[in-house]
Image (cartoon, rainbow, N blue to C red; front, side, top):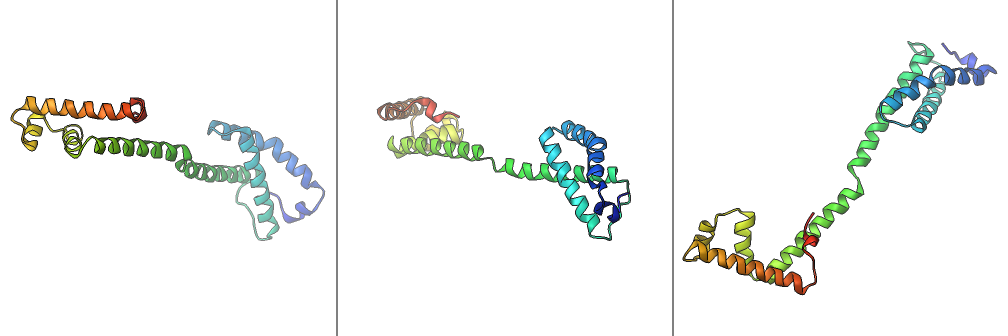
Length: 177
C-alpha cells in the first residue's frame, strides 16, 4: 500500500510507471471489452490516478485493497459514470430532434393540403384512413346512398389532393418517412 511518505519522495514517478506497467493493461483490456477505446482507457486511468493521489494526500485514507485493485475499481466506477453521461447525451441526439421536426413539417404540409381540398374531403379521408372506418360506415356518416357513392367521393377527394400536390410542385416522397 502507498502511504503519504511515499508520495513526497522521489519514487512517485517510479510508482506511477509501475502502475502503468501492471494495472493499465488490465484497464485497457477491460475498457475495450466494454466497447470503449484506448484513448478513453487512458483518460479514465489518469483520472483515477489523480483522484487516488488526492485521497491519499488527505491523510486519513487507507484503501482496504491493494493499490492496484483499488485503482482498477476506481476506473470501473469512472467507466460506468462515463457510460451514464454518454447515454444522457445520446438521448438528446440532435438528429432525432431534426427527424421529428421534419416529420411534423410533413404532417403540417399534408394537413394544409387536405384543408385546401375542402372540409368535407378532409373529414371523409380522415374517417377512412385515420379512423379506419369501412366504406359502408363512411357512406352512413356522410349520407351517401351507397358504399359505391362513398368510394367515388373518396376517389374525387384523392384526385383533388393529387392536383394540389401537383400544382404546388411537390413530390409524394415529401410526405413519406
